Image 1 (cartoon, rainbow, N blue to C red):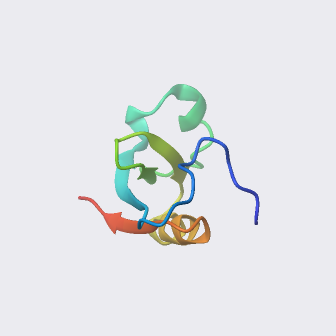
Image 2 (spheres, rainbow, N blue to C red; image 1 turned 90 degrees about the horizontal axis):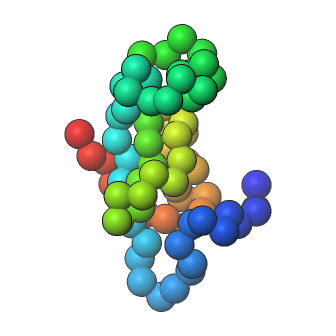
Length: 77
């Protein structure tokens, strides 16, 4: 997947950090809960300003997604 998404920060010389954290599915909107496939928790990839960039099924996928888009993922508890 080589498509760049317009809502992701633009490339630059600095290291782009995103934060990966678990999210309780129950805390998400109903339309997202319906797509969670019965999971209790999923993972959010967030920009440095806290903007949620993506929701994925597991931590590994969150890190892979971030690296595919040239971000440096950091785990947040």
